Image 1 (cartoon, one colour):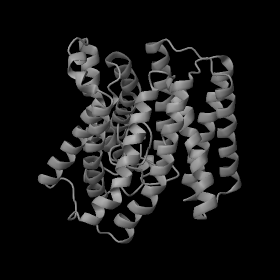
Image 2: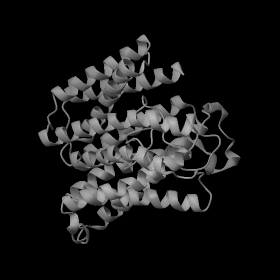
Image 3: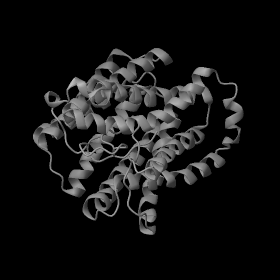
Image 4: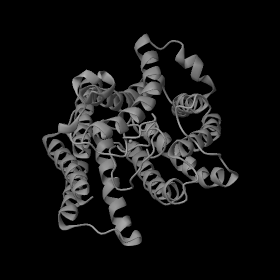
Length: 351
């Protein structure tokens, strides 16, 4: 459950560093593609003869598959496997590190020499990222997926306020209105949450704090190292961050007495075991699918697709986990997601 955000203000719902999960949309590409930086209009998509590798519908489906797998799959695993959040994170982040290392070795991804200073700077990011993943996994057994989506959209509002007050970022009237709409939707939803769980909400508050802190740390240092100084590529930053999460997660697993993870894993049914594997692969797939979609489609199309993926994840979660939402909650959720989508689209127009 991992990700790298390119922009502090555009949150989807993948953590912010090397591999995307369901939280932040614009991730550092995990495949070498010179066209990733360009947003191509839908009408300019490649001809069908280019095959699935350049097919927008195929990559939108891959994005959908990965997004739903990470959102619904993580909740399913946490409910089925038990309190082994750190062990799951070790498996997922370990898969990410393995992918990056192999890709670097065979020259699929470009990375510059890693210095001691880079290890120090991104140690903070690794800590924030670990806290994001840990708190998110701990919250999932207690709250509905819809609640997670609402909290992540709320993070967007808080990040925008901080960005305006401390970083001098200016927002037009439509963006302010969209942020206000998102906030109203969040308040309506939370005020009538029939699935309210104090423990789950506390974990999500912790997740929000870690998300906001990581967003701004990345905004300052990833931009500095990859765009201004150009002394490291986004792939190199990803590898540093993922590697540095592993010892932190290992210590957390030891403190949480997760030594019995394998014993608890053995009696799991095949569906749960396959879901664990799917979430490990999903973190890598979503990091490939997002930039590929941005290279084949307009940014607006990808934002709309990401919002649709959220809605589908909520519906699948309601079906699988028997989650009920009141009519007021559904209204608040719709307003919150609509406001978030509006804000994202306004951000694209502003650029």
